[in-house]
Length: 285
Image (cartoon, rainbow, N blue to C red):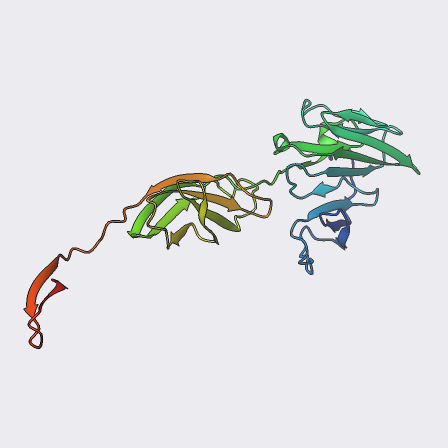
């Protein structure tokens, strides 16, 4: 309770960016509650950003921005304890109103906890070696006393692959051409899923051989050059984002290779004047 327990104001925030090799590629401080990070290397596309608030007492818990399933997630909490040698953690999977006292190595619900003390300051870590999707939306945090109102916490948001596309429709344009269109099945404003980068489109014949494959950034594609030796095809659509490949959606396509022209061939009889040999010629009308 900050009304009864005085907490000095935050002086600044420490911002760090880690690449997929867990190396720090950016480190800066800011007194604002926002920061623009530039110069990220193009050799990587996945980063972890940690934010640590600092006041005159010491370092608050590190808040980590969005993770992916299977990632290793580390929370770091630095406090000046009220009870020497003890820090209190909120642990996902336990009573949300319960804080677990931690003074050394222990594990609760796959969260590996540890605490070390130096010069009266405790540095405590909570580690998930492999983040599960079931943790999405869970809160984790630590406090220097066993009081839920004192808790410094963050919410875990698990980023994942895109959902399967839906509402697939198709239309035959000509004897060897079809157009296919579809919709996304996720509200990306509420679900922490990175945007779709592109779709992989593959066409299989009745022998289950791929006869066409292409990528598109749109939710529709026109496929041409389908062989006339077959009329039944299976089309798969796979959404892809920075995390990986979403589930494949399939539609069966049956096309007609009949002539689309309404003209009827007619035959007329003429005679070659030089040879008097009847010649048959074909014309259309």
